[in-house]
Amino acid sequence: MRIAMIGTGYVGLVSGTCFSEFGIDVVCVDKDARKIELLHDNVMPIFEPGLDELVASNVEAGRLSFTTDLKAAVKGADAVFIAVGTPSRRGDGHADLSFVFAAAEEIADALDGYTVIVTKSTVPVGTGDEVEKVIRARRPDAEFDVVSNPEFLREGSAINDFLRPDRVVIGTESERARKVMKQLYRVLYLIETPIVFTSRRTSELIKYAGNTFLATKITFINEIADLCEAVGADVHDVARGIGLDGRIGKKFLHPGPGYGGSCFPKDTLALVRTARDSGAPLRIVETVVAVNDERKKKMAERVVTACGGSVAGKIIAVLGLTFKPNTDDMRDSPAIDLVAGLVAAGATVRAFDPEGMDEAKKLLPDGVVYCDDSYATMPGAEALVIVTEWNAFRALDPSRIKSLLAAPRVIDLRNVYEPAEMRDQGFDYRSIGRV
Ligand SMILES: NC(=O)c1ccc[n+]([C@@H]2O[C@H](COP(=O)([O-])OP(=O)(O)OC[C@H]3O[C@@H](n4cnc5c(N)ncnc54)[C@H](O)[C@@H]3O)[C@@H](O)[C@H]2O)c1
Image (cartoon, rainbow, N blue to C red; front, side):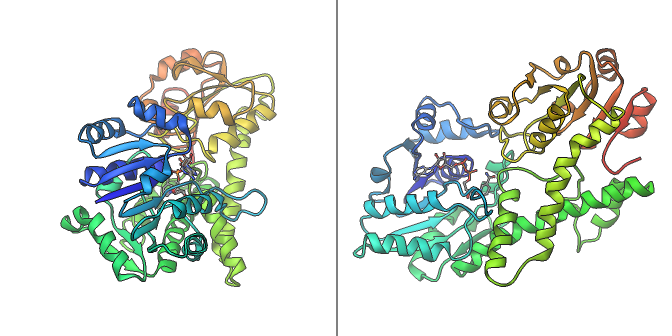
């Protein structure tokens, strides 16, 4: 079988590479010529653990290639995946579908023979209907079906998530398209991965319902963490105590500075808009969005308070900028609000992130000093703030930290260290939801 993957970003590149690992011939397309050039040189345009080896071996096997020529890639393909971005539309929070529709038009022009067009991008309910209309209007003669197949991979463990997913969701009313999709995911059938076949609209909604549920779970434990601080309880024990209940589950009960990333913020917002427009508002999710936005903005205040009420003219060391470890993705990272808040309060921020600094430079205010390693952020700093729980920050040398900082103050927004141990070492240590 042969497929074209339109959009070679975090999702398209990983999905395309993993399909080629399944034995399918894959052409990944991107309109960003720089990305394609890098891939031709076997340089990954994104950081994702294990991706370079998997790309290299599949290119070598002749199953995976990269191009900017969408038309050539679509010609003769059994399925064409749309994996382009669907960011928040400026102003109203709806998903911006302009990339999806532009890709659909280009695909329409190139169709020859029966083709399954698969929306892998996260798109609001009814987008499949619209994509079908766009293609039909342009090519009344074409034989095609439009299928929804949302992606659930997580950056940082994307390859394993794609090769061994909890489930695959496929939304289509067409028996012919269903057969093609089954064939594409044959390898996962063999390892008994649950495959949820459903209608196209239901499939589109499953993706949003999943992401908003997870965002709600995180926001819930974040608020419980604040309550723990107020009443002198320990949020980790609360999380364990409730998470052991099988109906609740242990995952996504880790408190922090608020959720960020390329999916939760925009997807929660888009679902809120869809629900309002449909006359069925999701009040829980609306509150989650508001609580999380406020939380991210308040993180700078936490640091200022810990520093005695002012950081003007002071150095603050910041470790971790990406929205989570093992990615270079900075989209909607909590570090953005935090660093902006500290700079606005007059601080000089000295920051380090193992993979995210190139992206961070595009999003953080001028004046941030980017350092070469963790310890280089610390000399003369009033406080050390841990924002992202990269492994590299889990075993820092306490005496070295103390010797570098102006004051032995650590604000750990990911609860990487133990409060009692840090206090024993002489730190003014503050974390989330633990006293
Ligand atoms: N990043 C994630 O962890 C994740 C997980 C699940 C689902 N998703 C969803 O997947 C979609 C893609 O997300 P992403 O993070 O991979 O985005 P991304 O921005 O990393 O990649 C999108 C790519 O599409 C390319 N593109 C846009 N229009 C094109 C066109 N007409 N032809 C060829 N290329 C085109 C862009 O140049 C870009 O490289 C989004 O809808 C997102 O919500 C993302």
